[in-house]
Image 1 (cartoon, one colour):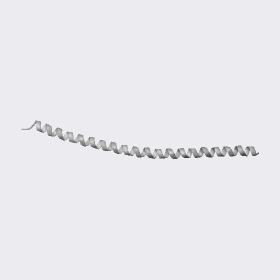
Image 2 (tube, one colour):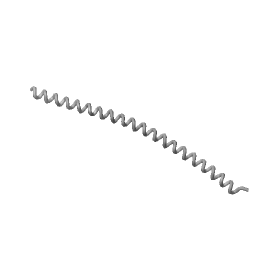
Image 3 (cartoon, helix red, strand yellow):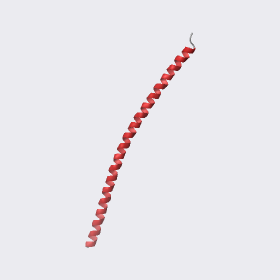
Image 4 (cartoon, one colour):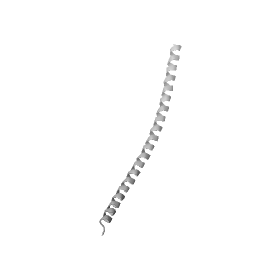
Amino acid sequence: MENVKTTLQEEVNELQYRQEQLELLNANLMRQVDRLKGEKEEREKEVVSYYNALEKARVEKQDLQVQLDQASLGP
């Protein structure tokens, strides 16, 4: 009986250890997810910024092309 009790206690201890390890792993993964979400948001902001800069450059290029065309047709 004592042998069974000892074996069961060892199993309980092992399961508790595994549970603690899983909880630690889960906490680490949650921190990693939060970090990656932050990085994703930063990259999305960069993409929007680059897009806006490209759109502005496109409009300016169009304006310059119109001015060039008008200068070519000049007096």
